[in-house]
Length: 384
Image (cartoon, rainbow, N blue to C red; front, side, top):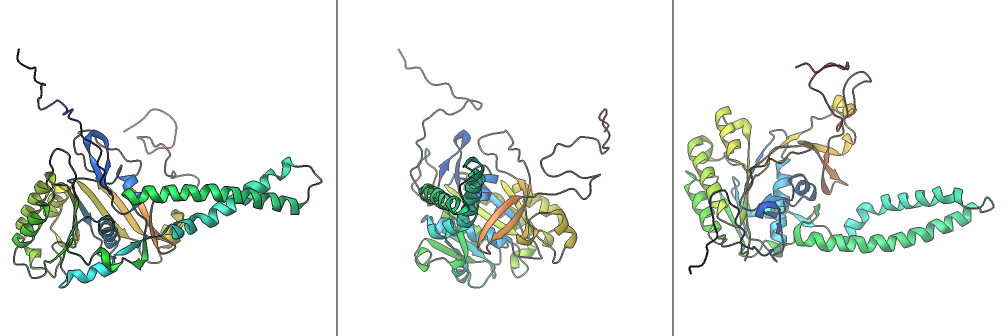
């Protein structure tokens, strides 16, 4: 009797068991999707786990400030720290010089110092709140002794927790210190390929380099021997000859996206949308799996400072326009699409949801409150 075959059609899910990858820097997601880190922990959370393997990420630059470089540097550093090969293309004449500006992973001591002051202040405040449960004869000196003892116990517990978090982050995502350059041994080897597109007469050279690079990471039955990352900075910049080849560049992006689908790699392309025609800018955005944009904050914008909390620490805004949908047709709905870019202690990138306060007491709602279809504040039937 012939063996029964498993029925497979275009609408059935492949049930073949895929073992969880043991390779550092990758984690499993829903629907058989695998993620690599963006190098920014907050961005990974916003995107639902990171950048999906095989996806094309595009970042629209802002002409006022190079905030897109913050995202690009952390993406590149994350891959190099995890020993992942990197292909970097830039309109600069010497792209390899840019590697010296990449940030270094923060040590556990730096991470502990970020939260130590806040946690200690909170611990002492809690201890003082318990003073009312003591007898009335107890003096402030004894309360201080109890507070110190309580904090020492909490500090031991928090130290073990920080150690556990640091170990888990090393497997997928790191916190990068923008003030410390990446150690040279991470990018001095043969695993980094740099390409200058300044004098390229057409995208064919860049396409061939990308094809050769991605050929090292074929996707075979869910096995992961190594991962690759591609970072292309300021494609179609004015100093490049490619800036006047709209259709050729669009064909290159389409081909790159196709090659990524069959490779264990992720690519990021940053581009200045102001230098493209509106029609081609829309075509570029349509080709992206993940579409982000950055925008600088105008200097001395006092009106904006009144609306947003923590305005002094902000350097710009991050907008999430599109998120990759691989192996699924269900859209991912975000709680917010605009986030503030902050530099904590001028060292660490932090993305926070905007906390917008009402302009006055009669109009405006803070973030997170439900809104209606009507612009009127009066209660009643909905009007459109």
